[in-house]
Structure formats: structure tokens, C-alpha cells
Image 1 (cartoon, rainbow, N blue to C red):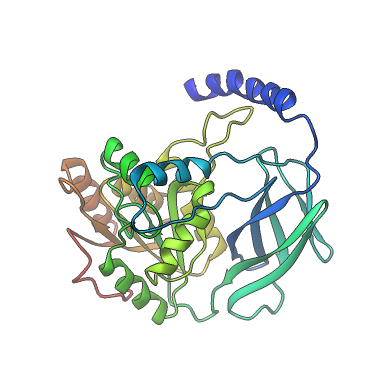
Image 2 (cartoon, rainbow, N blue to C red):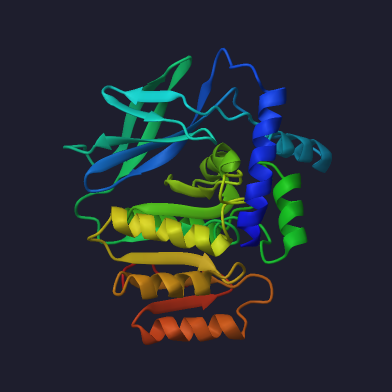
Length: 326
């Protein structure tokens, strides 16, 4: 209720600001490309239309102040609503935050990365990619990012902010055991998807980190921090992650899923709730225990998942985890 009340106040204020300070229609726009995914019927090509792209210029020796200024710059974007993006006869319009999704008929698309050159009115086109899982995939994997594959300190707000805002793509630490685990899943033919409460502004930044550390390429489900008519920010961490899990299970109706996460941001609670909504679809849960580790509530939720027949493995790292379906 509080967030809805804040949205009713903040949304018209934001619109008034845009009308006063951003009145002119931009002459040119660009597409910020996001990695998409597939359903049985469609390939979903995703992105966001902006007046210009924001990118960092990382250097290992950069000071925390330089990193902070560059990271802050990623959020200084101007989104463009009402633009038409098209691939052939398939079109989509950007919403009030500049986001769009093209629903391309899947047809006989080959497994792997589907690539398409899309066009936009008033700007340059872009190459969008989407993951099409193989028909013989044994299961799917949905992995958290913060403190699961990327050390963030999300269990502590101050540590999370400091790590996220004062590091860069060259200095951020990725867990090697997570890299090994994810590659093991990919070798088995499992599609891997990533979910994070990080905002969409960090999509390219996270992709650079993943590429630098050889993490498998996978569609990301990040969070919209914009203000709408009915919502201030985009719900809670749990709401966002739960909705992403629901979307991916619906997109892969014949696959069982393995969920990978940590105990630092309530993943046991989110994963138990997902298992309750989708009986039999979640078959394995793997949890890292950062910081002080699992607390009493985490352990109770782990026990509840095990009572549902889910194999749950948890510990300080993933070194003993075998990438297989139980």
C-alpha cells in the first residue's frame, strides 16, 4: 500500500519533470540490447530504447571515486516511450520506461542463440539475441547472481552498495566454483538463466563481467527501478525473483528445474514459495551460505523443501556440488 501511494505521488512528478526539462523529442534513439529467451511458440527479443547508451570504461587501477562516477553515470539515462521496433512484420512499441519485447514466431528455429537484426523508427537498429533451448534438454537452471556467482555482500546493505558502486568490470570478483558449476550444467545440455535484483541499467555491465570470467552466456532477468502509475520501484526482491521463476517455468513447460542461489537475500523463502506454486517442477536447490550463513528460518525452509522431495544442497561454497539432475 505504501509503495502504491508513493507511486501515485511520484509518477506525476516524474512526468512533469520530463515535460519541463526533456520536452523536445529526440532526433535519434538507440537500442540497449538485452538477451532474450524462448517459449514453445515464440522467441522473445528484448531491449530498451534510450537517447544514448551509457557504458563504463573500466581499468584495474581506477580509484573508487572514478568507479563511483562511472557507475552513477549508468543510471543517467533518458528512456523513450512510444517508439516502434520491428523485425520483419513483427512489431512492438516501447512502454513508458522505454522497454519492449518482440514476440517472434519460433517456427523451426535451431537450438542455441537466435540472432535478429531489428529496426527502429528514428534510430539505428541493433542485433538482438535470444536463447532457444534444445528439445532434448534434461532440465533448466535458474541462478541468482549476487553472492551466488558474483561476490557482492548483498546480505549487508552498506557492503552491497560499496561493492556495487565502487568496483568496476575489471575488479569485481566472480566465484570460480560457480563458473565450474554453470559450465557443468551447460555441458549436460541445460539452458541457464540468471535472475538478479540489479536494475536493467547494469545489463551490459554484468555481461562484461560474465565474459571476462568465462561465465556461460544466459538470459538475465533484472529489475525495473522506474516509477509507474501504480508502483514505486518494482516490487520487492522476492516478488521480482518469484515472477522471473514463474515466467521461465511457463516458457519451458516440459522441463524440471534446478534453482541456484544463496542464503543472503532470502532465496530459501523465494525458492520454497516457487516450489509450492509449481509442484514437482523444482527438483533441486543449491545454496551458497555467505556471511553468517543460514539462519533458523533458512534452515526451516530448507527442511520444508526437502519434505517436498526436493534435493537441497547448501554450504559455504559449491566445490562439492556435482552438476547433474538428482
